[in-house]
Image (cartoon, rainbow, N blue to C red; front, side, top):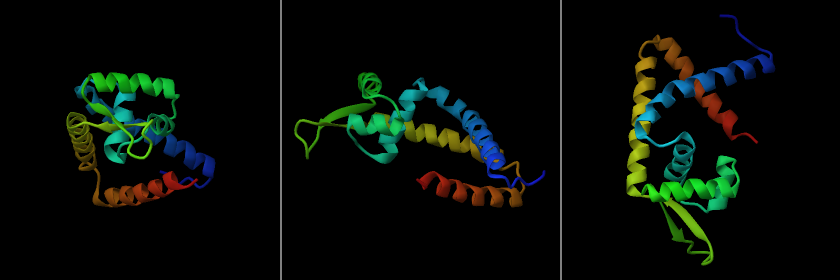
Amino acid sequence: MAARSHSLEVATALHRAAIRLLRAVRVADDETGVSAPKLSALSVLTFGGAMSLTALARAEQVTPATMSKLITDLEAEGLVAKRADREDKRGLRIEVTARGRALMEEGRKRRLALLQKRLAKLSRDERVLLDQAAEIMLKLSSET
């Protein structure tokens, strides 16, 4: 495998690989019976903490109206709850329920098990290289 050094080639390869890997592990999410957009919003709340509808919409890169519909559905399913904002009495904070947290944690376990099974097929050197690449990807994801 030839090493790529041109940033566009690397960006293209990384984009393709990230999407394919995400799709490969996302099959584990099908077992939840919850749609991908709802799971994504639930994930933000589970692993990022309670937030306003506006902040959640911004994090998910959707309109507040779209997020409002998702939250209404998640609330009806018992996965999130709306609470009064302690700092802004007019505002609401959306938080994950115990049921929602359990759903997300089980989903995460299934995805990680799937990844672990695939990683076990790689050589030790390949796993070390992927570990290093993951650190670099985290660095890339935090740059503005």
